[in-house]
Every structure is written in C-alpha cells, then in structure tokens.
Image (cartoon, rainbow, N blue to C red; front, side, top):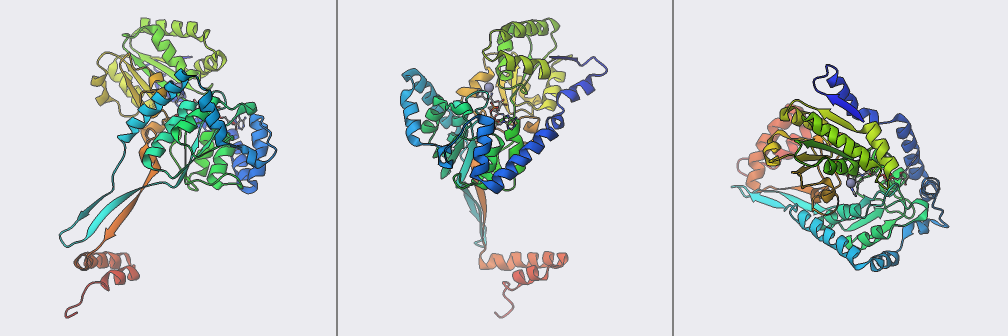
Length: 433
Ligand SMILES: NC(=O)c1ccc[n+]([C@@H]2O[C@H](COP(=O)([O-])OP(=O)(O)OC[C@H]3O[C@@H](n4cnc5c(N)ncnc54)[C@H](O)[C@@H]3O)[C@@H](O)[C@H]2O)c1
Ligand SMILES: N[C@H](CO)Cc1c[nH]c[nH+]1
Ligand SMILES: [Zn+2]
C-alpha cells in the first residue's frame, strides 16, 4: 500500500502515479482483445467456442450448448432456500422501485403559429447485459443490469455470463428469472462482448451493451463502441473513504477490503487528516486480510493499488477526491450533507458512517454498475436513461414553414448550400399564391 502526504514536495507526482488511468490501458491486453474481437466478428460461433474453452474451460458439443435453457433458471430459482430467495426478491423490489423514479416522459409544445415541437422517448429494442463471473459470481449485477432495462421497456434482454470450468452459479440464474431476462448465454470476457456487438450464428447482435467486467471486458466494450452503444467503462472496482475518525477503524478496514476483494486491479484509498486514525485503519486492514476467503486477491490489490493519503484538512480531502473521481466515495464523517457542495466527481456517494458501500452493492436501490478509472468525471451510474433513446419531433404549420423558412434560407445561402435554401424557400408562399 502506498503512503502519500500532501506535505511531501513530491505529492503531486505520487498522486498522478496513483491515478494514471492511461497506464491501465495495457497495450498487451489491448492487442489480445483486438485479436479476440476480430476472430469472433469474422468466424462467429467457432471462435466463440474456442475462446470459451480456452479461457473458461468450457467445452461445448455444439454452439447451441452456449445457451442456458430457461428450465435451468427455473430449477435454480426453485432450488434456493426460502430466505435466500426472499433476499434476492427484496433486493429486486428495492432496485426496481428506485429506478422507477428515473423514468422520463415524452413531451411536445405548440407554438403560436401551430408548429409542434417535441421529444419522444423510446426504449431500445434489444440490449446485451454483461454479468461478470470470472473470479466471483454476481447475481446482484444481474438485477442491477436487467431491472432498469425492464423499467425502460426494453423489448429483449440478452445476458452473457462466463461459467468457469462449467460451473453455473444458481443465484445468477435465479436472478435472471426474477429480473425478467429473455435469454442467457454462458460466455464471458472480450469474446462475449464481440458476440453481442456483431452477432454470431447463435447469439443475436444487440443495440447496446451494458454492464461491468474486468479489464478484458472494459477494453472490448471500448473497442466495439460505435458498432453498438455502450453504457460506460465499468472496470475493476474502486473505493475512496474520507474519514474524520468518527467510524471505528475496523469498519473502515472492511469497507476498503470490500472492493479490494473483487480484483487484484481494484483500488481502495483512505484519506484523513488524523495520523493516529490512519495508522489504526492500516493495522485493522492487515488484521482483516487474514480473515478473508479471497485473501490473495485482496492482499495483492491492497499491496499494489491501495493507498492512504494524509491531508491537511477537509478542503484538501475534497479536492483530492474530486480529482480522483472514484467509483464509490464514502464520506465517513459527521454531517456528510455539509460536504456535498465540495464534491462533484464520484459514481456513488455513501453518506455517513452507517452507509457502507456494501449496502449499495446489493440492496439500497441505486445502481452498482458505476464508472471507474476516473470516468465518473463524465459518466454516471447505470440507469433507465441508458436504455432509452430520444426522437426529436418537428411538425411545422404552413405559417411556421413560411416564417422559419425565411431564416433558414438566409442561413443556408450563408453556408453556400443552395439545395437547403431552395428546400426552405419553396415552402414560403409568394405574393398572390
Ligand atoms: N464498476 C462496476 O460497476 C463493477 C461492478 C461489479 C464488478 N466489477 C468488476 O468486474 C470485474 C469482474 O471480473 P472477473 O474477472 O471476476 O469476471 P469477468 O466476467 O469480468 O471476466 C472473466 C473473463 O475474462 C476473460 N479473461 C480472463 N483472463 C483472460 C486472459 N488472460 N486473456 C483473455 N481473456 C481473459 C475470460 O474470458 C473470462 O471469461 C472485477 O474487476 C470487479 O471489480 C465492477
Ligand atoms: N462493488 C461492485 C461494483 O464495483 C459491485 C458488487 C457486486 N457484488 C458485490 N459488489
Ligand atoms: Zn462490491
């Protein structure tokens, strides 16, 4: 773990090294992903099956075996213990309820001359949702991806999820059944993204791909953007905790490790102005690491990418957090509401010492698919708005065509675009007509 201190003359360089987002664009990974995407685009199911065997250890007798039948989802749902099923259903209810608030409506307005202008909101036809599954299983990500799509009214939801060594996680299938997914394919990584983008003999091409994943998934999404829509870059998880010392060190240790345990490339950072408190949290993290099922992943993440930053005061803490634009920001402070004015860049903000990030991962309601790698500067949590598109509507009255036509004609002539000018002018009634 790195130790930074704003009093250090070299602080700016060290902070830059901590968030050198471009350094995460590993050319070797880019080259490998480019090759995978091209192979699936050119050779379809044959390439998809080869990569699924190579990276996930899943051999298929035919491409049809890449699909997980609905009967398996139903069996998985029925196989859950009542308390397990109730937890999934309660989370689904809360996530659905939260996203209901994000609906937006079409609108029109009529001008004095009868011209009607407006904007029509439409759901996307078919979306692909990527559910990660390499190092852990993510039924919660099924809900977070699919439920906003359902609220938006998407016609068809195609889900992909890797099944390492053929192991299908029953919670993931149960979540697909609860969330109203239409089809599920056992594919992952860059090859799944390519299949959704270009389509293969068995996988339908989609209009947009959403969902989180590791660096291979995030790189592939970047590459296919343009051919299909994508939601954002939702790569390895991140947490930044600003603490005024009011939360027990042990609580914060679990919070930091809750993201470190996702991936060796995940990043956990603590900021505080209280030296003794920083040391208590560092000690608590070391003790907590030994208790984790996924200790090797979390240990590497904390060692290579973790950091504690000693700042002078609250203003410095906010400025650094805003600069880093973390996926998750925990304000483990008294009166967090007073801090919001100073924070602009964060995927999700967890306010106060009782709002641990894990609540947001599973059940609070807001989406856990969030921008990483500094992209919270320009993008936001996955939401209903990612599953809609807008048509502009222009219905000109004859009077509007005449009045606006004169302006359009003048501007078109200014641009030297004669056909535009004539198109507008021919609708302007001439004297006596
Ligand atoms: N930002 C968010 O909103 C969010 C939400 C949930 C999870 N996450 C992140 O999602 C990620 C999940 O990662 P994961 O690995 O568990 O699952 P994953 O499904 O994203 O990745 C597994 C796939 O990666 C591919 N892969 C692995 N090694 C490869 C290699 N050497 N070459 C080519 N392809 C390779 C394989 O195809 C495999 O199927 C974590 O980084 C986690 O932090 C982010
Ligand atoms: N923290 C992850 C987003 O970065 C989401 C998640 C799912 N399950 C547990 N956590
Ligand atoms: Zn998490």
